[in-house]
Image 1 (spheres, rainbow, N blue to C red):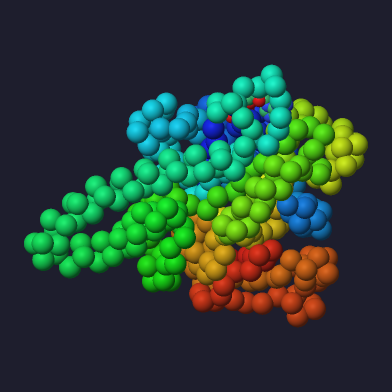
Image 2 (cartoon, rainbow, N blue to C red; image 1 turned 90 degrees about the vertical axis):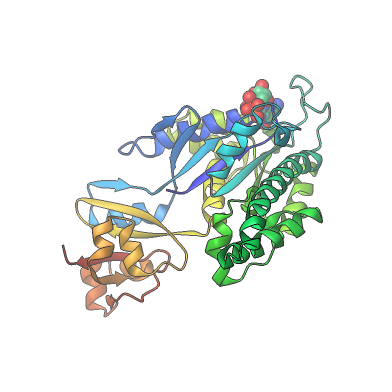
Length: 364
Ligand code: GDP
């Protein structure tokens, strides 16, 4: 599955946010309960009202949302790349995630100590990014030194491997994160294998005071500017409020949100922003037994999409009966869509679209 790592300096609200996320997921997906894999790892349901609509039409007995994993990565402090705090453990954890949710303290509260003694989310973001850049640079230098020996021995593959590493090193030495490097389509895979921390996309989570959850504040506005300039994403939430909301039932939640002037829970926005950041999209399988959402990367072809369900579906793939979400709703189901001529039979080269309702035919 896809994983987002929650990082941030101490006392910015990471645990508060993580607790809220995991409680809400349990409430949302009663028949697919939140499961704790480790104390700091949780799977959360991706909120998607389309799934409920489809289940209503097909009168599905069960609704199974798709999920993404959040990992609470504690212990990043200034000096982490030098092994301070939980340093190395932290870096190992963060290598394993697909994207980073970076929680930034944007709330003033004299009772909550800031590690640097002042509230400045831009400086905090730089502190963490700097640690990650140092860690990347050190790991690249180590690996390049190893490759140098192989290159001297005439190893062509080693020379090829060094090319991307050098591009990353150049950026980092100029004070830019690895994600600033433009990577050719053909190099994407090898680039991903480098597992550079600063190549991962970042979602800044501006943690604002309770009464600023709807409006944001001057600090979160600065983070928004920074995110836009970097090509990263941001969301504004109040972790404290989210924690309160996560303890309410669905009806109470709606009233509470309306009172606060919020259209939806910040966590829903956070989960969806993470989903977008990861370049993910959803397709559905719908029947009387269950309506289920599946996660794939944008651009995935039908056989690989089938593989999200089971490896055998991919191996024995024959074709996919396909109805677009809007056509399914307009036809009030598959039969209606078929009558309207909206059911397509797609083959191995079909690129699955977000919202497609799919039925796979395959050789067992
Ligand atoms: P972590 O160290 O990043 O995991 O931070 P915690 O989640 O433990 O939060 C640190 C402290 O800040 C706790 O006392 C929280 O209650 C408090 N806190 C978190 N979010 C907010 C917020 O939005 N407003 C205020 N006033 N306090 C918050």
